[in-house]
Structure formats: structure tokens, C-alpha cells
Length: 317
Ligand code: FAD
Image 1 (cartoon, rainbow, N blue to C red):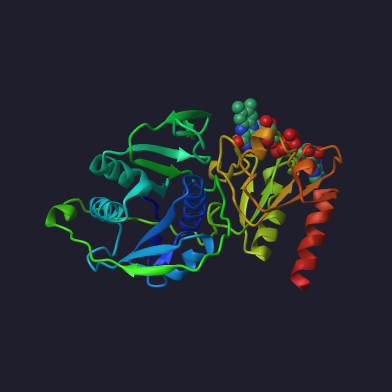
Image 2 (image 1 turned 120 degrees about the horizontal axis):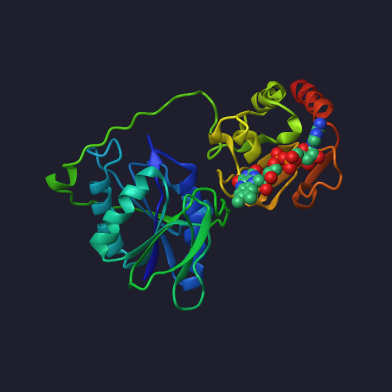
């Protein structure tokens, strides 16, 4: 019996979510008292996954899979799950895996829960908390099949180091022409900006900034730090910033190493999206702002003074 994690990669490099699903899978394996096996496709340096708890990495190399192919990937996951006697399979919940996981579910006769935000219950029945209704609510879903598939919501669990000494096993898989009947083409928009999901540092601002004309200093601070920019919900509702930047319960979750919140009060709905960030820094004029209670470092001060000073100091660094 084992827990199998699919550690997704693009162009031979692990996606950030790969480290999160391995971290998650490790905890599930510990709960079940079993081993964690990670599956990678077309990745040459698999040892990176040991850091997050993968004791064994099954590495599949297949020339025909230069790009994602759901049917072929599903066939590979089934073959590896059978070989490793996996009872729980963990993936992320990206566009690709939301297409892939149901195919694996059918082939393994396994129940599947997507957008999962927490570890499964440690007692029977196997219950799992997931985001539903466009992230507006949560549901506790029971998976009652013998084999179970968990799709972890991006940035909901975080990346946790848990170093082990692991091994890599190269595995030959058999793929038929039928696995390649569907061809998908990926068109990526290149904006040159770091995305919130992949960013190590996020600079986020709220209604305290007074208006969209004041975001220049936020962009500048983000540039100096190589960070992504984000905002609170009212800011995107007011049209000051694009909706894609809205962070929180109804927006994007953030699991960065550093989250800088400027002029954001720290309402629970906002905090719900940033809890997985490691270090939170708050800049706010109001010493009673709730965000200070969740912060690792706080500056009570006016953003219009503090942020330009911070930029000057960082540039001189
Ligand atoms: P405000 O609450 O207006 O806070 C502005 C802050 O800026 C204050 O703390 C003030 O002291 C400070 N400030 C003012 N001037 C300065 C200055 N010059 N320098 C520094 N600080 C200054 N919100 C989200 O963000 N994300 C969500 O996903 C989300 N989902 C929601 C879901 C539901 C169902 C509901 C009901 C609400 C949701 N909200 C969400 C809204 C949330 O409750 C808050 O209203 C919102 O987060 C407040 O945004 P804010 O902190 O930018 O604004």
C-alpha cells in the first residue's frame, strides 16, 4: 500500500504545485502509516522531491510526451498506481489536472475530490474538505471507494520541507496509439510579470491606498523585490486593479514566502487567502487594524511615507 503523488512539471522543471502536493502527500502517508511515492514525467533531476518527503520517485521518460496529454498521462498514472499498489493518489487542481484526474478516476474505479483544502480526516469515513461554488463555500466530501484521488487546491496547503533520503526508479510504460487520439495545444500569455500563484514575494494593497493612481509605488516596490502584485477585494471591485489580483476567500490564495499587506485592514475573508504565506508584513496607519494580529512584522505608519522609504532603502541594498 502506498500514497502516490503526481508531481507535475513543465519543460522538464517542476511546477511550484509539485512541491505542495508532495508536502501534502507526505502528511497523508504519515496519517496512513505508509510510504510516499512520487511520479514524474520527463523530468531529469528528480532528487529535488526528496526535500519534501518523497522516499521514492518513479521517473517516466517518454519522447512522445513533449507536451501535456491527458489520456496518455492518465494511462501512465494508472500503470504506476497499479505497480505501487497506491490506495491514495494526489494531484494538484490545475486546468490540466482537472481534465486528467477524472480519466484516472474512471480507469482505477476511484472516487475523486477536486479543490481540496485540508488533509483527510484521520478517522473513518474518509472525509475531505473542498472548495465549492467558485470558492464561495466549503463542502465535506466522503470518498467511499477503496482507491481515492485527491486534487489539492493550489496554495491551500503550502510547501513544507521534510527531507528524506530517497531513490529514483526509472519505469518503462506502455502507451497505445489510442492514448494519443486527443491533441491539446497550449497557448500561454506572456506578460513578463510574476504570477501570484508562483511568486515567492507578494506585495498587496488595499483601500488604504485611496485610488488607482497611487499604485505606482506598489508596482515599484514589487519590481524591486521581484514580487507579484495583489490587492484586497474592494480594490478589484472598484476597478482600481484587475480581478485576477484579488486575494482572499473569494479570490486567489497566496502561499508565498513573504506577503506584504499595505493599507489592508485584515478582514477574515482576506486573511483566509493568505494564511499559508510564511512571513506576513503589515503596513497600516491604524494600530488596531486586525491584520496586525496575524502579522509577523508590523509597521504602524502612513503607506505614502513608508513605501517610498522602503523602496529607497531596498534600492540602496
Ligand atoms: P478597508 O477595510 O477599508 O481597510 C483599509 C485599511 O487601510 C484600514 O485598515 C486603514 O487603517 C488602512 N489605511 C488607510 N489609510 C492608510 C494609509 N495612508 N496608509 C496605510 N494604511 C492605511 N476581502 C478580500 O480582501 N478578499 C476576499 O476574498 C473577500 N471575500 C469576501 C467574501 C464575503 C462573503 C464578504 C462578505 C466579504 C469579503 N471580502 C473580501 C471583504 C472583506 O470583508 C473586507 O471588506 C475587505 O477585505 C476590506 O478591504 P481593505 O482592507 O482593502 O479595505
